[in-house]
Length: 119
Image: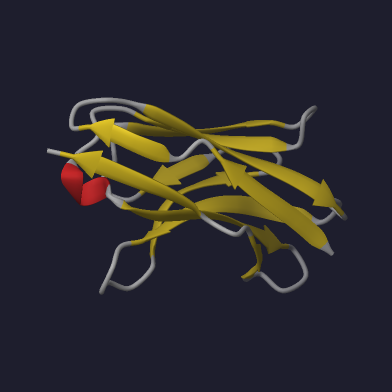
């Protein structure tokens, strides 16, 4: 069982920055990767960025490339999402999730943190 706790959301003006954190605890052995997702009101959840637990390879949604950076600190079991040049369309609840080598699916989720970008 893996537990995830997100923090760092808030209200920011367009063009501003926020850094989200996701603290991971529990059985981290066997994790393949972690992802940040977001869900805006009335929209489906979408993946924003991913990072492999070992090696650190990353990927991003086209909508955030060049603005967001995902990183990890394995010593602290924490994954970060640095969000720069924020736009009103980035407003959403952001979730982190882990994907295990066993299931190959994102099966542990945090509670979410609200990010609101004002114009």
